[in-house]
Length: 436
Image (tube, rainbow, N blue to C red; front, side, top):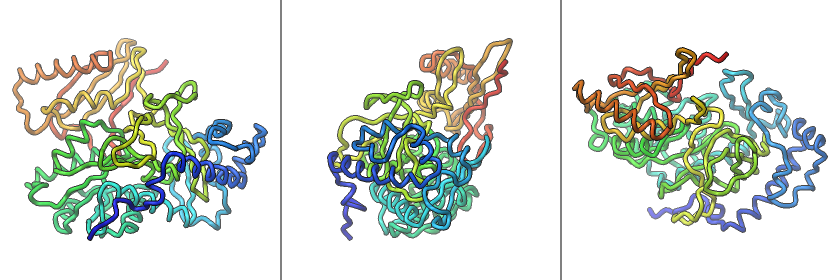
């Protein structure tokens, strides 16, 4: 069957002028709708701003930022713009550092979310003939139900495997003829490790062709290594529960940045310190405004995620802006000896060595009043325990890390499987420093 290259041609083929005209129309409608929210109504009154004052996209800058703390302070429903009886579902963060953040959805919100994410999956080549397996947790985590409803909207046979139980995951993949899997990058590497243990050759014994990855920062080196291990094309995605979940931005087949759906969101990149806009191509904090949501629209939400807008057109023809893979989070930045370091910089260096596996742990400790960094990284199964080679490898890794991050870490090479594994996002940094 000949399928269209577009899931929703009307919105995917808009040119820049059409995108911006639609954004202004939806922004004005969203701002007026937000006056039903006690939080936004009070905020607009405080700065003497009226919805009618938003006459251009540039006027968006007149609206104050919304933060995660605002969601916590108004917990659970203080930002909602519709009565609770109109809402049909909520998703919530874990709330490990205070009140959780709660996002409400009407039925229309859920339908639009499914459409947006189905559009993403279609863009990378998935079709109703595919068998899609989701290894994300279901429940409050948006990656489970988000991909589930989108895959069903697209028309695929879906396998809601949920998180964990890797041997069962692999049984489903081989028995059901799974062609596409959604997994976080660290778990995709774990799938391959267990395949090797069980004698499964992903190219010979499975029908896997497509992997959808996201939810944790990862380097291009890690993506390419996963592709090589599993014999698939791996496509990066971006989502967050405050924006609804997965489907905010997604790579196309070109794999050169994630298209952010501008009929759903207005994206800004700002300097995380000054909060002033930066030029396209410069890294900064991503700020998102929802313009197609009923229950709980958010205006200028500070995501804390660091990325950049990729300048220039995409060969795929879609003119929706592209954002780069996440460099990290502005609140996850490591400051060591006065140097700003992101874990993704360390990963990029480690994965250049074929002798190393994909799991590593950065530990920060205080020794004799000095802050020190150590990096534990697992060896691959291909590497021997030759002591001389281990010493030489350790020295070379240390040198390259120093060149990249400008401080000298203590590098420890550990046997494969030594580092703790997590069913959720991988824990990459442990900060044990004593702050006086």
